[in-house]
Length: 587
Image (cartoon, rainbow, N blue to C red):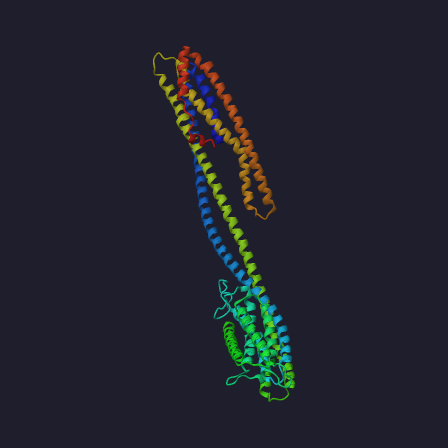
């Protein structure tokens, strides 16, 4: 463009020399015009070739931008696929996180529940040993065995729950083989604790059933001590009452309602037995209804015990602790106090050892759940970082595509601009100069046609048009060269340095800010220069119009005012307005 600017700048001067030569004698004209015309034609050809070369370079840039856009589209598709995979992995990690938190919560509840159950078991053990009447050795052994099985039953139920609570997708499956979990997840521990008391409730119901002598109804000798007149079933009443109080503290669940109903029925039976034992009048009808109620209680307790064993997966015949089995084997009806004391010592040691191991296992499980949750949280954070990275890259590619599309559109306009320059040089400047050369050659063949007449005729056509076109080409090329040298080349050169810097490099942000600041300054300077060029062009047009009115019209014969207005009106009506496409060329 700079060469086009320099070449086009020489055209008006060359045309001025032509005119001066044409005013000389014919011998001088014949000697000098051919050489100058040949040089002028060479200028036009060079401008045309240069314009076509610039157009080709801009077209190459268009193709490069298209390749960049295709690469960005492919990269965008790849990032979107990777982002989709990361989002799926993040969703899976979130599901696992939810399941791990639920498992951690259950493990913590279980850990606390086991600790609480240890204390409660020892307290119940001591109180039961104190409450059992002398001579009820077998009952004492049964109660001790039930108390021992409370923790093991809870352990069995919890173990089954934790092995089945989370599947591969993190979905909560259930806690038992029969899946009795119609209650919410927060009451799982409570349900297991209530299920663990089913054996104790069955023992109490069994002892009430032992009071029935089928042929004769109730055996009142077992109900009341004939010597002391004390009711022997009061310990059963206390057992039902304490069990009910313990059950009442648990969360609401299906087993709670069943167990409370059994306890209430047992308490009612014990109260009726106490009233009947202390009453002098014992009616057969009342005794018969009491026998039926005891049988119904035993049936409910049996069903509830079967349901609890099925739900927790515990065996119907639990293995007896070695010391309990030994005490039962060696029991021959000796002193009940001695056997009870021996049992308490041995059973306390056995339970302490068993519960201590279970407490340690619950602590290890609680710790393992925390470790798994921490690992899942780390995986989620990693997925979130990758999600942000991929999403950021995808958004940057989208912005890059938009920017490349805008650049491509602007460069296509530049290509059309240089096509216009090339066409202007080819169609106007070169053609006018060639026509001017041809006219000068042909005019010598016309007889009675002077050189002065030739100048007057041709200055309106080829010479004048060639000068105008050369001036237009020079103005455009000069503006382009000035803008490029002053405001564009330095900014473009800084892009190469900016691309080599990493985003973490502090110089990256300073270079980017400098580029942004330089682009803004260039934009304002270009806008200011365009305004100045426009004003300069307006002044030049006005000066040329004045020259036309002063010099060119002076050699023309005058016309009337009406004819002059008619000519001006015809010219104004013939001038068309710019179309939208033409206006777009200047945006």
